[in-house]
Length: 175
Image (cartoon, one colour):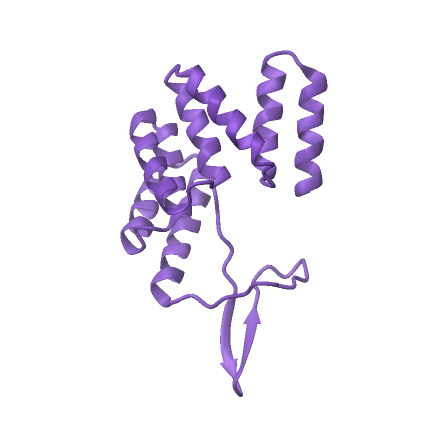
C-alpha cells in the first residue's frame, strides 16, 4: 500500500508558499514541485482509499481508488493501492494485472514489486515470488516496508537472526 502526502501551496507576491497539514513535524521539501488540480484530486482519492484499506474497508477503498485511477490513469500509487485492494479481496490475478500496468509507468517501483511478490505467493507461484524478491533486494531498495516484509518472511521461516537484520534495516530507513 502507498499513500502520498500533499502539501498545499499558493503564490504570494510571486513566491511559492507551502502549507503542510501535519503540524507535529517541521519539514523541508528538497524537491517540491507543484501539481495540477486533477493530479491533486487523484492524490486525494488515493489517500482516502489508502485510509480505507488501513481500516479494512475494501468496498470503500475500491470506490475511492477507482476514482483516483480514472482521474489519473498513470498514477502508479493509486494503481498499486487498487492492486492491494484486489489482492486483499481475493483477486490476486487481477491485482497482478494492475501491478503490471503500474510497472509500465515506473518499472523499478519497489512498492509495486513487493506487492506483486505477495500476489504471486497468494497464487502459490513461489518461484516467481522468490525471483522478484531477489530482484528487489538487488536494487538496494530504500523502501522500509520492503525490509519489514522481508523480516516477516524470515520470521515465518524461523530465521530470527535474518528477521532482526531486515527489521533493523527498515527502522534505519524510517522510524
